[in-house]
Length: 163
Image (cartoon, rainbow, N blue to C red; front, side, top):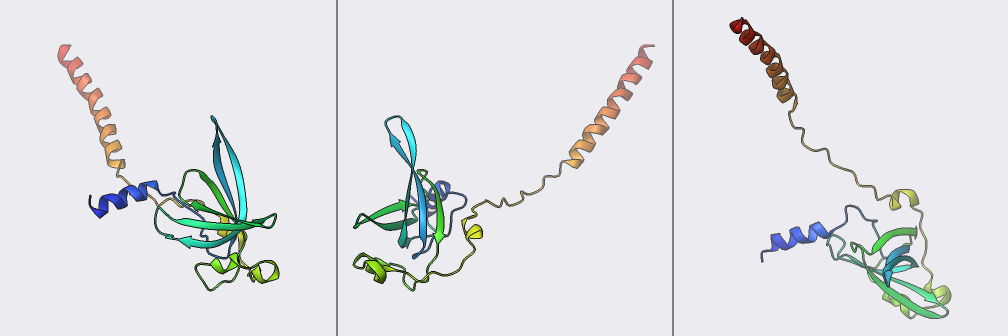
């Protein structure tokens, strides 16, 4: 298979708009979980320690949090239909793409320096639709109007000929 066909398939799988998640962000990920025949929503809040392949349909983030003294990491495919939404709650200043050093740290040494950001603008994922090319329908309508005008004339001529 050619690369272009694979790219088209991958692009069809991508969501229209996603949040720009970066390493160091504290995020709240809402995921659909199937139990039996029902779906429920589960949220997981933690620090993004890794963000891979942002432009790809296989874009992934790894989120870490510490619960009851135990570190828990979950990996999420951003474009997965099971990931309902991702909300950035805090943004931190980091200089690395992979924050794996946070695994060995705890307490104050695991803190990240926060930075100001526009929370509403970052979490807004509305899709801006591009205006479609305008199809010239006005002449078609004008032709139809002309045809309608011509039909009564033809009917009138036919009636005159009968009479």
